[in-house]
Amino acid sequence: MFELFQFIIKSRNFILFVLLEVLSFYFIINTNNYWSIRYFNTSNFYAAKILDWSNKAREYARLRQVNTDLAEENRRLNALVTQLQQQKPQVPTSYQTDSIFATRFQYKVARVINNTTTHPNNYITLDKGTVDGIRPGMGVISPTGVVGKVKICSEHISIVTSILHSDYMVSSRLVKAGVIGTAKWDGIDPTRMKMLDVSRNTKMYRGDSVVTSEYNSIFPSGILVGRVIRVGEMANQTFHDVTLAVGTDFNNLSFVYVVENKLQGEQEKLEQTTAPERK
Amino acid sequence: MTLREILNIVFLFVLYLSLQILIVRNLVLFDVAFCFMYVACILLLPAEMSLSATLLTAFVVGIIVDTFYNTLGMHAAATVLMAYVRPMVVRFQAARGGFDGRIIFSIHEMGSLNFFNYVVILTFVHHFTLFLIEANNIFLFLPALVKIVASTLFTSVTIMLVQYFSRN
Image 1: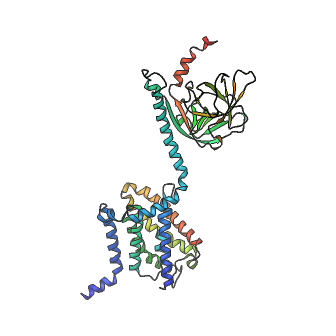
Image 2: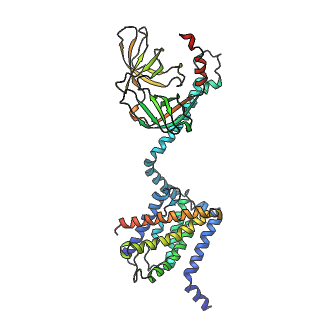
Image 3: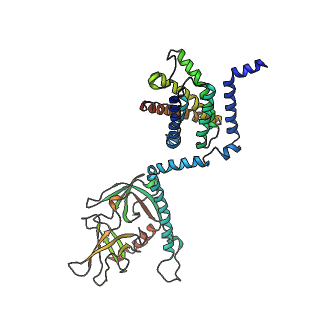
């Protein structure tokens, strides 16, 4: 008996070691044991509290990821809104829109990796290309307004003609006045645009929104282009000289949506068949 | 042990456990290198502390970390094994003439090379056990081995860095 005690005392460390290991492995193998479910996991009140603090501190570091997620969610919602809008156009109720026509706009999120606003012809570079389904001719919009049109695509990069470009024109509509015109950049100030072809007979309102018209094939209708800030008179006195504040903040452009119109090719092909007759 | 030493140890535990749980828990390099720097609070326990007490401490530390990783038992098993092996490693190093007498585990007392050896060997024991338990499958042995080597390096370097920058 004495020898047994002596043995236990002599090798007490080894016995303790084996006991603790056996206990640990009991926990590991028996994953549904009472202890690991009831107390020793992150749903434990104190553990959850500590993790909550640590999360609050790390939230700042994750803002970038959060932004990406929100942009992705916006893309989804934008697609949904356009679809719903297109299903209910401003026409008599008896008119039914074709469902393919209503769902023709698809959105893709891309990040701006290069952007100029100071040249007379400005281009924007995006971090996505043909691999992600972007093709030349697609429209590009930002959360705050129209951005431009895809010009060139490589596999992973696309270049977009910004609306701040001397040749670029957007068919747009004055919301309150209800007339169609063309928005174009005059090449001077990246926050100002001109709206052409607005007849003198039209009653103009300061602050009226200018949105993309239904005549666009690359943008969904109703995307903000800018707001009217000044109305003057053209030299020929036939049209208003309308100045707009550009809706998109080109200096802080980070995430944009590339809009794919699935019926664009079909529409353009059909319209081209009438082209020779026009002249 | 004096009161000062005890307070030192308590501070050590709070420091390393909170670093582990709050900061390096989500720190993974290249999907293979994990950082389990909490092992340092067992590694830095004074040598004259009895082995039984060290084993119990290791178990408690392991269980606390397990709670936050939702892996009850794994860290505890690995940490207890490491604590049990620790005196053997110390004896082995002392026999090779690395150091003698009353050992204080710090970079200043032992010298960088000796201290690094001590940390790497014991961290390897810990990570080897931990990742093998976690893999739990013979086919996952190779990926686990990569993780073991990468994580051992990462953890050891982190512990060395913290040691360099904490004077006392």
